[in-house]
Length: 457
Image (cartoon, rainbow, N blue to C red):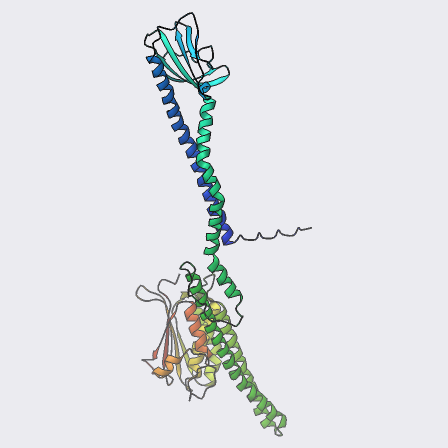
């Protein structure tokens, strides 16, 4: 039995991330500062207390020691409550001459060399300064308990860090207030977007928006504008498509009614033939609408596909030959070798079929149509050229080609004007360049499609 997949963790809010990051950095900086303060205080206290030991030893060295009786032990009186923490000893030829009242009876250190030394006496750690008296056989030892030094360091560090520790909650509160105020525009923007009606595509107000949030508002307004344009185009497309479909459907209905009421067989046959033509026209229109909808749905292809343009052209020409023969039109294909282009075979067929169908449909009976495919070279990219001997088009009509449902009036041919929309949509998706002009050979329309340079395999 399969267990249910674990639910995805809820993403943390931007405010929580900022608070966690900033407070964590502040705490880390506080701990680093505390460590540095402890280290610096320990060093400074050691230097200061060592100086006191050396100064005490210097004062003892100035004392006249010849008055001390070697047979008696002289103890200095205690004059201050902290005096027991600092002790001294005077040794002469291995005999203790004088000491502090709280000093141990054994030597603070056995070291003879002058200077500072750490030692263990009576289970306690001592910091001891060793020096010689006026006489070389007198040794002066001044010591201080290490525990007392640590207490001083701790007290110094605490006196420094306690105010900082008290300010930490205030600092955290200030950071929370600042972060909350900084993300307020984002919350307000989210509330404004959430409160909008689904059909509302008006731009968001950018007044008072911080510079960091302004790109997001600008991008949203751009999205709303593009969506509005897309919806307007779709509404126009839907209305035009409904109008175009209404005409063949009305014709089919009328011819069907004629066939129902026809008495003569030839009248019924003519009505049924017209009904079939109307169905064919409606079918072609629906197919073109579906092709255009599919092209509009895919802004780009995730996998680039290649096709042999010459082979596709041969297939399309063969498919349209029966239509051309009925009107005594000739179709010539000039493609000496395979030409591979970055275009899916299905789209290449749609492209060529629309071009060739328009050339045959809008050319008179007995016209000539030529399809020429040129491979890419060092001087020019791959090219597809379709030209005919028809009446051609004016510059104004050429400029409007590609508008959905636009048709050149006066041609006497039925159509929806979607073929050029499909062609230009394919060209935009694949960066193809389309050129329209008058055929220099026959005077009709010439359409040239250029593939991007270095795009062929």
